[in-house]
Length: 309
Length: 309
Image 1 (tube, rainbow over the protein chains, first blue to last red):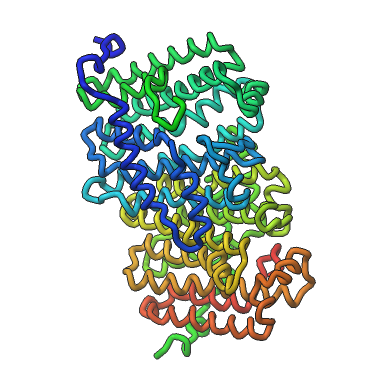
Image 2 (spheres, each protein chain N blue to C red):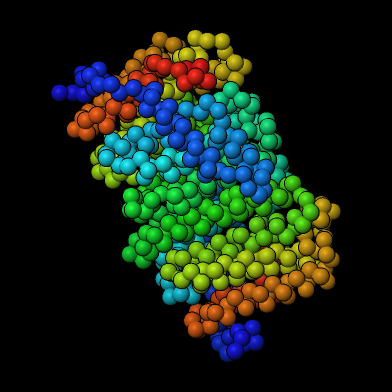
């Protein structure tokens, strides 16, 4: 039986919103401790401004924890990596928003980091958050729960994902443009973080190589799906100046192919992500969070309160 | 017998210049392979421009290898970390040179990265070099030579050193200024990399905790010594516009205390660094490189050809 023809959600009481918002609270608490105010204060304030931004959905950490739990991993084993993913994600967003990059004046409904702290401080806050993530993994992961070789794989995976074969390459192509660049940018800027988060969760729990490959394809599909749906929703609502500029440059699926085709792409991605989960059917109910993420990315079935969808 | 009263160099044929320049060649070759040109080409070109700059002395990698060999470590165990140190060092210099930071138009006798590739690309090149360093350590360190827990300590040490408790903090205080900031900036911007390099070498070779502490203090003293002597030499030669501005802002020991007092500080640092090596006397001739670095930092006894001292 193919998983795609079986919806495991129907006969359970699993509620994604409860699962997700409960995790958000735990993650926020741990991030608050992981990035304390200390000398020199202002650099930590700039780091905290982005990492602890209100309304953050913590999608990378939650994806990491859910993938770890799928394979029977303890979530205590995953929290440090989950927090690190949020740190490097924030660092990447801070640098992407800079005037010389995407020149985005706001992020998550508040002024961008450089608008508040200046360009120099925003660069430094990013430069400090990247290594803090790696340090946090080494210093906070319980050694009795995660053998060292797994932790090294996690570090290599995050380093690969944020670097010149991953997110930095996506940002580069986003700046340079070029033929067929939209797919590359979507994959690298938006698929990469989701892929990396799912893979790290699997690595922490000791998933097998073929399972890691499935998580990789699943995570990437969900990340790109989320962004394509974002573009579709943007096209249907009032556009900001930035959105309009992005569209003009043909930097989204919608701008390139129109809403209808983008919706087809979204459905293909939904099916692709769910198909990857077929192989995990034996894990039973622990698959529910990963399964539900796909539909959330496609349908945005509930609101997080402060966020609009 | 105190080591400071005993010069182990006198009765040996150890020649630092030969040792150092031989290592430079090996390091350059490995860095050339570690940062290949691949898609998207331009970001790798920008990374290579700084990492493979001609005339680079490779002080961090050489320090790391020498510290590893002091404790009987194989230099093959140290090369990946040595290369990673050069990558994160280059990344840090690229970002420090940016117009919104130190606004330095040249580095190592050639135009700064952002002068050639633009500010956006320079930020991305730095952002890509940091994680590449971590990835390189995990993917290239021979697992039969270095147990995983040691490698995790090395990663944590580098992450600590480049982050908000280390070099990023130094750059922040350099921008902000303030009372007594010169010492802090010198320690964090120039002592940190040297300290981290020595410590990583020791960690790779399995040095004990008290030995790591010695290496830490030794490395920091040598790094600051090198910079103080740089300032003294600058004060004695024709000044560049940047140097003059730095002096005006009181951003060097010389500007703050004058040449004579700076020379006293340099001699104190030389003695301090050598005193730390006392505890390693039992390691015999393998101590010679670390010992010689101190005098090189203080006296610049030979030239590297392309570099002026």
